[in-house]
Image 1 (cartoon, rainbow, N blue to C red):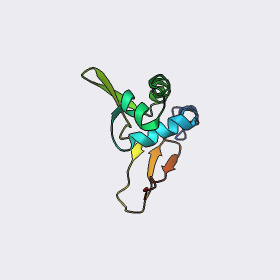
Image 2 (image 1 turned 180 degrees about the vertical axis):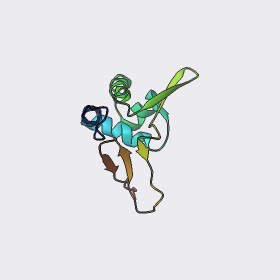
Image 3 (image 1 turned 60 degrees about the horizontal axis):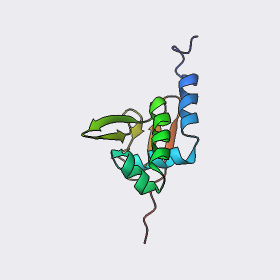
Image 4 (image 1 turned 135 degrees about the vertical axis):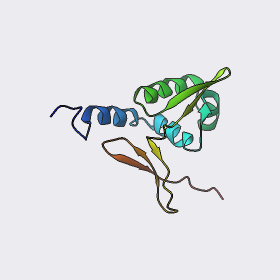
Length: 112
């Protein structure tokens, strides 16, 4: 069986998991759950440099975990609908569908 025929898609899955293995990238993905953002918005929200955010977004984009569009002079990043899933059940967790597996993402803790 070739990899193209394998429903597990081991190479593709491994690349996506590898892209998510860095804490900063997980924070970026978590931030994008709220909706599309540009590099500056992400850098401000996550308190990291624009250069660092841009670097990590490039890796996430190459792995197919984020998409981007131009909005005037800004590039806006978002999670692809086929990857990011927000279940309709109240208690269900958001998750990333990586094809081979899914990664559940805990809800943000409300600050008192």
